[in-house]
Length: 381
Image (tube, rainbow, N blue to C red; front, side, top):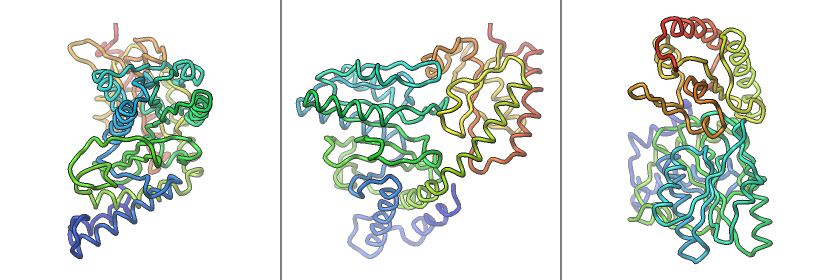
């Protein structure tokens, strides 16, 4: 957490614990804090305050956007076809699968070898009964930035030609702090964020919902969040979200340049120092803090464990059980060979990452890879 976000939320965990819906003094103070945070988030996104909803995190925001809009559009008689991509976060993929179970027809777009979705393929998938397109802004596994603004332009042209609007949602969870977020420049109708990704508390999130976008709430009960998300607000988490997103959207260019240089130093050092290593995903039009790299002949989970024992935290997009690998669905969609995908790990850098930490990884990693290879442990057949 950012120190400023932690400090901002503490009063609402201790002295001021009122329900924002209450008319008593503590409730009014809590409501004022929620309103102030909503204004901060709206300013960061170039949105109206009435278009900002607070949720429990990215998963809820993504599910609420995809299902809430799709069901509302179908009820209005607009259709039952949804377009998304094969490389979405599982929150988006599982929401799409849920919609399929509710009678929606879902088209899953592929991607190229860099992990980028084709605007032309999306345009070709549009139908008169299409109601929602959901395309993530930047991929969580390989960092590739998607052409969301171009897709929005295609949808506007489709609406002009056919008199039928298709709502556009984007999962922007990975992007705050690394690229500008302007909902009007992007042209989206809905946008999802997770607060802990930009230095606020876990268990908080944001859903931007453009004014007049058809929407049916997932949660029912009270009239909170402008009748769109029932439940007593997580005031402390919301306050932290407002403070953190302000900090994350300051000095983005300078932060991105510094972290990209560190990422490139890490990438180049690994490729030079570890035989049989290869990068996955776009290396240019991508998030500056993401590096996905494969190690030939290794199973990634064992490498993750070996590095963890040396104090280095990395993640794996694959799952292994009883010697059966289930490689990352993102890498599979990109056409990465299964043996290469099975040995892939992701390094995630942050604004606190230092050159000394990069050097530490470059010192430890080659010997750990060599040890695992020579032991024959976790070798992919």
